[in-house]
Image 1: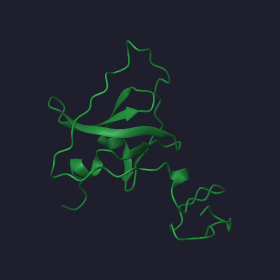
Image 2: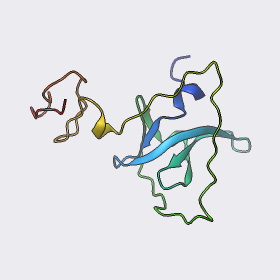
Image 3: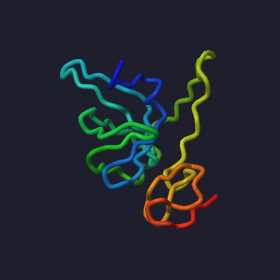
Image 4: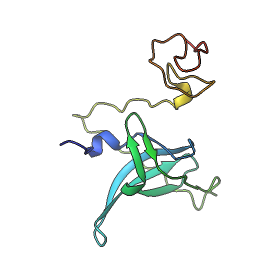
Length: 132
């Protein structure tokens, strides 16, 4: 189906807000039966869980890019932090791939932020030598 993503292709992807900050990774998708609105549940690095409406998603590729900045509480005390949930992956499902932060991805230029081809030795936008 053109223009749609399955749950399997969304869960686990990093979510980056409009300011370029890594919000966290997609934990699940949700449907509000009252409003008939879909959202993605994002597990943040601080341990909080944030619901992001589908309308707030600008693009989806290697990561999910939001069209607005998102504020998340930095510190949660132990009473507020959600209990970790470990669910075994179904036998038919391959293990999830490790998603690198954009600055760690091969071909990422630390000078200008351009994502080059992973085999590139120099940034095609600014000419800076890339990390191997």
